[in-house]
Image (cartoon, rainbow, N blue to C red; front, side, top):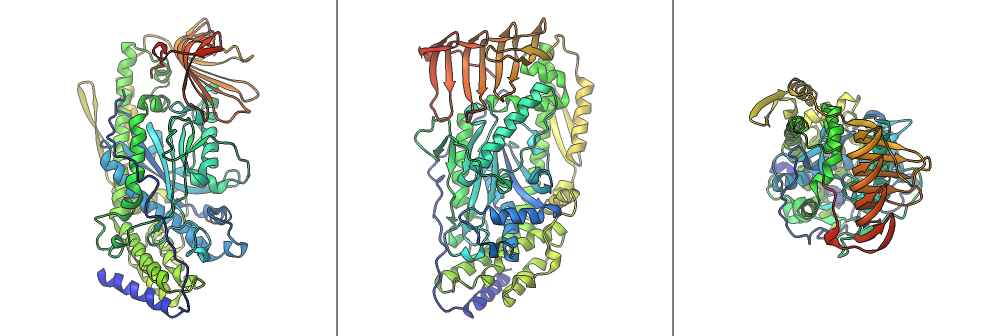
Length: 640
């Protein structure tokens, strides 16, 4: 292996020296990330539920054959860091760069997973690889391959790396992931009730901000529509990066933003993460294919980014973040229980059902955690990871040579190394992962041409089933039997299955065999009203004479798109008592949140008020009118 790495380096140097006639620009990056300064924190989960995950990490893993050309096109015309000249958009090397973004994202995301998985409680960090798809109605989009996103999670992280589509700009300033240079793209989001003013969006890379904001809005609208109509969820949030590539309009909203690490952290705004081209420690790359005990990407970016994620987890209310996701997960087992959960019933019959259902969701989380570890082992520790490390080491050696003496115009040979990313990725997807990738790498460098690569290395998934096949290839352990022990009250039960579908069938069967009937009736189509709306909405919870009463959840929306969501107590159809209310207005960006005391639908008493771009305020209201500062000690908060 060591000899092979040396041979690669020699071939690279030989190909470059032959064309040297001057000194090129220097492809350099920042030595540290903006996340580096975050202090280490210990995350303690005080939530009432053991069913939820702490972090779900989403990333692009494979492209369906039908989506290849639309993805390549979108990638070339929506470049981050500048506009790509039209003549360069259709070059084969550009498609290889687009492939490398997926290939390297598969690899580098594992550093983030490993860091968080090591620091957080067992089985609470889950991977959600996506397949990129296309159809004429939706364009380019993605969907998850595993069932990870059906598990309630405190926060969700979108991650991928990026390279500028134009290879002639390799030595210039645009973002790139090549050799010791890595450009991460990063989005952190949660449920809308955790940060209502931004629809749950907490942090986003600058170029992805608008797309991420629009997706969060769509997610909220989908949830409101689902609750109003009493239907199952239909919106599946694609990867924010893929949504960014698919945007065809220039509509831009004045999103409330703040800088990462800004001292005004109490502002309800989205942290804008800048595009960083981070330069990893070269000393850790010179022999990466043989010694990867110290991860260069972890040292330069991941540890700081993971600390930022942990800081978020240590400061937010986990029950608030997962309340509605838990309700949605419960509805898969028991729709009647899901309504009782919104009503936050304390009855013994509800508690018994809830304990069993959450024990089963916890078992599902552990099952997917085992799948995530299999994906990590196959991607990072297996043959895929080995080939990627050989490629990164070869790229680094090439880049170091070019930094000292090379002509910038001679990019064909330089980007032959980049083609290996597509080679490894495609060969893995086709099952031809053996030695073909490295053979092609050496051959391409000798010939100095991308087109010398074998046609068998085309990157594609021929069918929807190919995505699962791809995951099984890079993570063979996915095909093994996984067993999870479920604990419920004083009993223990071991559930084993070959795949998640079989596992869920077993958990549903177990649940249906053990539940007992609920004593009280909880309605999911009761009348909910608000004095600011001429239409009525829908209430989930206790009902009296067809109107909302006691505790539950209500939603209402008018024809203009204005909406109210309310969780708390009600009387005679109106919010009355202690609760939380999210108000959205069609002409306003973001949402407004009120928590405290209500009477006949209006704030009345001391409330906490949150608005986009502002700080939280404690105010006193009389019949809906703000009459001045409130006393924090008199605020009665909503409990989840």
